[in-house]
Length: 195
Image 1 (cartoon, rainbow, N blue to C red):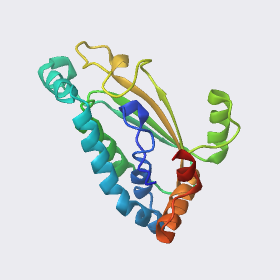
Image 2: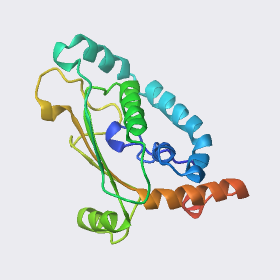
Image 3: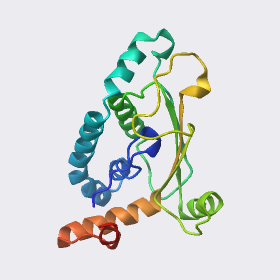
Image 4: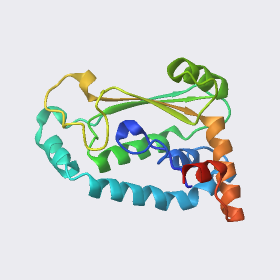
């Protein structure tokens, strides 16, 4: 399965943007793993936009609201030392995706961590004593595709989608596994379990 990593807080499956994040890292082998996933990202975004009939309504409401014209911010924290990340490229990608799905007025926090930190957070938040690729903590309780309403008033906290925590070493390993599986013509064990 091709992963691209995107934020459940942006109303797309959390794994949709995973590979794209990996392409922002400065390792050539990971960037190679991402090539095919870019088409997957575009397809997923088109499918999401088509499925969400209210996306255009949200975009129009955001344009018409004088309070909601400002783009939401991206708080970025790189707390890992495994790879140098192209922060500007990653932030541009997140900005583009928010705009495409009609939530460009909302802010998001992205935190990059290592395995140990992710394992600690995963144990504390989900009771699972193991690292994982991404955890999302939505600000809004009712967050799911098409649920967030356009912002029509000026309360900065309301503009927050939530926090995303990405385990960079885990993502790298998964990209390498998926690349090897693609080269061998087989799915990964996770793919077989999900079918």
